[in-house]
Length: 123
Image 1 (tube, rainbow, N blue to C red):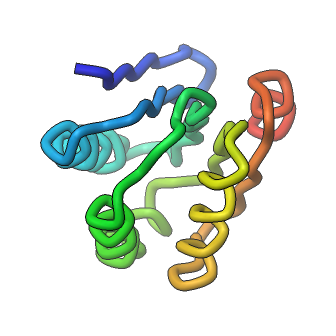
Image 2: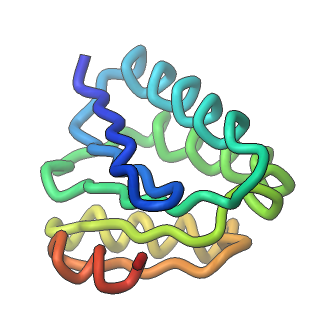
């Protein structure tokens, strides 16, 4: 399954790679992501979402993501310090921008084009 989580052992930094998911894989991604956010109790976490290989997302997945973000607001406020998203595909960036206009993130974030910029922002 194309879902990778690496604890980078730098404070509480996670790098999550996001690919083109089937609807079933996307549901599994959401379930695993929620476990990460819920597992941190003592210190807020930072996340790098590497979506550089993401080229497509379905309307169903966009809707599910939007509802998920809405439902996760309190948990994000409590456990997420900041995040960054690596996006190379302009269409995916536009979709993310639209989702974030509808459901604004509750913590600082930055959309970047490469891993170096992601680390520079997150650290």
